[in-house]
Length: 263
View 1 (cartoon, rainbow, N blue to C red):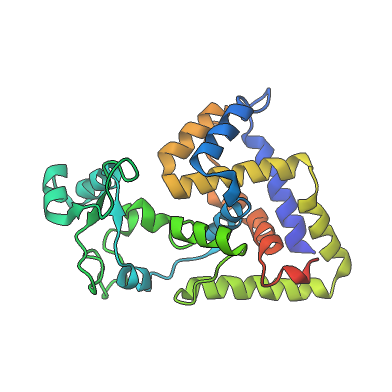
View 2: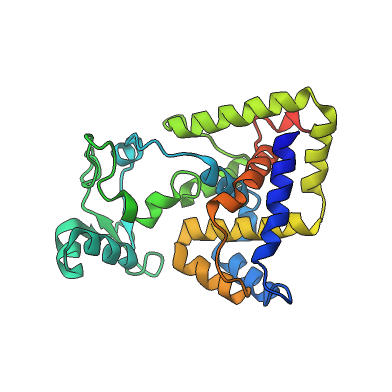
């Protein structure tokens, strides 16, 4: 099947990002990743990272309207303040409030000045959606798939969750389901996909590592992912387009509602 061949070629092409001599500090970087995101959330972290890369946000504003609170880090505040032409002090005073939680768990994080029952202050229905989309808070970048709440839900329920409020998610899952039905008609291709992610082929292992790195980029921000990439001896984190074809196959193989089609 063309989609499977395309995904395998994409995995093989990732080797071009590895410097001569191979990856560096692999064990140490994996340990650091385990400390950032506990291994108990695997494979949910990887599966949701794949879904995040594949979904196309339609900026419908549902997140902006329905989220009860929006946490922002000091880096978020600096980035948004610069975009708004404000000093950091002025932005934090006028646009944020203390975090609802206390202690080391939240550190210097604050909350956007969003009142209960009201949309995010940066929501604009005429756009549609977010007025600061290019510099939005990291929690908004990670939503919905890689939000902390979703990862906890996935781990607790032992399944990949769905988001009825999100039309982008519905369209993506319909695309995956359609592909799964096509696999039912091609047992050889179905078997190839199953064997692919059950294997320890070098290109599959490299893809999993890079997908995890992309998940770190989404969850923690590009600076943290770039640091991990440098420690691995990589010149950069893979672009979204470099992993999307393989991410589609990976999402399919881990998606509980349709995994029966490929087992």
